[in-house]
Every structure is written in C-alpha cells, then in structure tokens.
Length: 627
Image 1 (cartoon, rainbow, N blue to C red):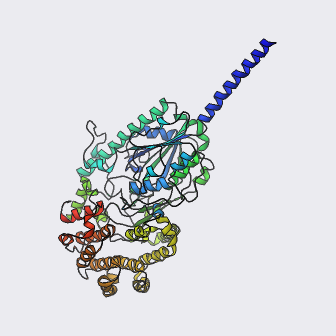
Image 2: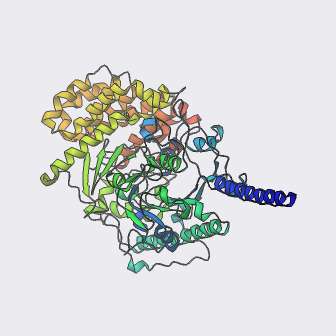
C-alpha cells in the first residue's frame, strides 16, 4: 500500500512539475514581444515591394511581409525625423503638443498626466530598449522613465528571464548625410544609373542618376542588416513570439522629399511580421496586403494594444493590430494628416491631408518657397546642382516649382500623379473634392488646436513653465480666429478684401500678423493696403507685426524692407524671434525682388552672444560662409 501511495505521489509530483513547467512557459509567452526595425529617410517608392519597376530588391523585408502584413497606405505625419519621432513616441499630433519644429528651440513637456508610450509598457512589466536614436522634441526621455536602456549598446537581452520586451533598432545607412559622399568603402553599386527613371521634378543629369543609384544601393545594405537581426531573433527562439514592425522614419531623402509635406516626403513602407503564436492579434492572414490607411500617430496605440495595455486617454492614434482590430474596420480608414513647419533654420507652415487617392496640401505662407536656403540640405551635391541649374534657367516648369512661389492649396491625384506635380486645385472637375478636403483639414486644425497659428517665439514664451498643449486649449478660440484670417487667402480678392481690412485694424496683434501674411499671399492684388502696411511696419507695438508688414512691402517691391528688418534684429533679445526675422531676410535677399542686406549691421546685437544653431547657420550664410 505504501508502495502504491508512493507511486501515486510520484505521479502527482511529476504531473505537478509538468504543469508548473507548462504554466511557466505560458507565463513566459503570455504576452508577445514587439521589435521595431527603423530605417532613416526612406520612403516607400524606394522599395521593390512597393515600386516593382524602380525600387530596390530587399529580400529580407519582403520575407517579413510574406509572413505578415504589408500596409500599402502608410504615412509619416511629418517629413522629418524629430517631428515624426515626437509624434510616434507621444501618440499625438505634433502641432497639438508644440513639437512640430525640426531642431527644437526648446524641449517641451508632455501634457500633464501623459507619458511617452514605452512608460506604460514598463508599468505593465515590459523591458523597453532603444538602440539608439531618440531625437524627440520633448524633455529628455531619460528623465521620464521611458526606457530601461537607450544607447548604442541597448539590447533586449539584458531583461529578466521570461520578461516580455519592446525593442527599437535604428539603422542610419540610408540617412540624408550619407548622400553627401559616395557609397561606403568596399560597397559597390548594384543599380545601373542608366536604368534609373528620375522623379518628374528632378533634373535628369549624371549626378542625379548616380545619387539615385547610391541611395537604392543603400536600401540593399540596410536590408542585409535587418536580415542579420531577424536571424538572431530566430536563433534565440524568439521569432514565433515577436511582432516585427519595419518602417522608414519618414519619406525619402533625394532633393525635395525629406522636410517637405508632399507624398514623397510622407508616404513610407510599413511591414509587420506576424509571429506564429500570435496570429490571432492580426486583422488579416499572414501574407495579406492592406489598403486601409495607417499613420505614425497610430504606432503607440498599436504596440500598447498588441501588448494588452490599454492605450491612455488623450492620445490621437488608433491601433491597427491587436485585440478588437478588424480588417473590415481597418479597410474604412482612408485619411492621413501631415504637417511641415520649421525645418532647421528654414521656416514654413504646410498642412497635408491624404484622402483616398488624393493629397490636399495647404501652404499658409506660400511665399516661403521650398528651395529657400537650408544649409544642411545644400550639402547634398544633387541638391546644390538642382539650384544651380534653376539659376541658370535650365529646368523645365515641373523641375522649377521647388524654387518658385506655389499656390496656397494644391490637390494631387496620386493614382495618376504619385509625385505630385500636376496641381488640380483650379480644375472645375475636382472642385467638390477640393472643398471637401479643405473642410476636413480646417476641422482637423481647429480640433487639435494647431499651435502653429501662434508664431514659434510666442508659443514658447507663453508656455515656458508648462506643456504647450495647455496653452493651445486655453487659446483654442483665438487659434480658430487666426485660422479664419489665414484662410482668407483661399477666397477671391473681392471677397477677402473687406475682412482683411478689418483684420489689419484688430486689437489682437496676431490677427494683424496673419492679415499681413494673407496680404503677402495675394501679392499685387493687395497693393491697396500697402500704405496701411507701411504704417504698421514703422510703428506697430509688436515686432512680429512689423516683420510681416515689412515683408509684405518688400515682396510687393513697394519699398525696401531691410531697414525695418535690421532694426528689429537690433532690438530683439530673443534668439527664436531673431530666427523668424532672419528667415524673411534670406527670402527677400535671395528671391525676387532681391533686396540687399548688410549683415555687418548686426554686430553686437544681444541675441548673437547666445548659442543657437538656427541663427548661427543663417548668419554664416549671410556672411558667405555657406554657398
């Protein structure tokens, strides 16, 4: 009997041990891992997967797609890294939080009660690592408890046994700066430059073709790196429990894409490897291609949802993987919001709406031509050649658009015109689509509200001790009014003239500011307000109003704007305000009518004693240090 009891006990013990092993295994795989493989400066048109005739062969990424999902309509919300990455890490549209400017003048706080999304994963027991680029416009992540480790040595391998992980691996071989030179040592081009088909807005020259070939070759180099990483996951027995999401951190880097809110600057590849053990969290079978739109603002909600963590209230994104996401609902998503503001020292204010086959673009300061000097861009040889050929009159109309004033709104049918060179905004056949997308964009900007309607120095000074998002909520009605004034640019002059006259006399300095920008947009049609603008340029109490008044007069060739702009630069103590003024100085000097500027008159001004990359580049360029 004792022997029987002993045997029963032994069987029970063995069963219990087996059950515990199974329980431990279940706990270890109770939640999936997530890995992001992020390449820099790479739009979807550079992949064979998306562009079979001209894209690079990337077999490792293609294998991920065949075992997962390929999103055909994936968009960065911004065409440059710090703004795109700030959108991703917060799960919020950048102009709502005040992080829409590339190279932040000041790092800002997340909204009260909100965290960068890996913080929520850490609270849920995930090990979070980033190798290694952050480039957020928020106060440093290290101070926010976001990452267990963020460095060039960061690895998920340092986690506790059985701990699920979220890891980001960044690859820089495709970054813009790599095109300042040739291919890496011992790397040979795998693309024949003679077989390249250049974009319709690019010059077809041997140099441009060579840079295309180098850039396509770099896609193949990064694909090999990605393949090595995936092999390591497989060798470590992690592949069946790990979602792998690959994307480029915004569109491509050849001239006119990175930094500009056109389709080539915003549309990216998005490939998701779906692990065998977690296929139930995917909205479609492995190998599927999905047409529903996804945006970078959705990435944080997606990872949290996949990991079983409730996305926090206050974010703007929606998950496209995980519990509750269906293919039928995902297929109804057909809109993506984009934005481009200051890009290093070059100011701009452009909003974009992809909707179905169309892209609508709204330029709020259309006189700030895309080709305005930006020192880092023109280090790229093909970029510099592009401008030289324009100056020599050797480009056709499509190739010249980048250096010339554009309409305040553009509409492109991307199904027929993927690179956006044929503007349909004035085509009566597309009038209904134009008005529909205009209204959608206006509604989006009001709902945020869009903080770019407050000039950058104003936004930062009024939110110095808090998140700019709080300022936006306080001034939502004012921002809506400023949008109304800015959108007078979209009306015929005979309908805009009277409300503009009222706005020029407003007690609100920012209403006067935007009225003058709208006058500049109308050009000579608004010449009847030149005398009133001259009075504002000479004596308005706001330096920013004086700036826009002088700019309007200079663009009209009504009078030399440089004495007023020089005076403003001599008066201001705010380097951020100085950046904004210097942008107009360079615009008015380098582009018609070409007013001369004496940079020596700025010697000894207070803001020059500070450290600020933007004004240092502008001053160096005005001195002739940068060609």
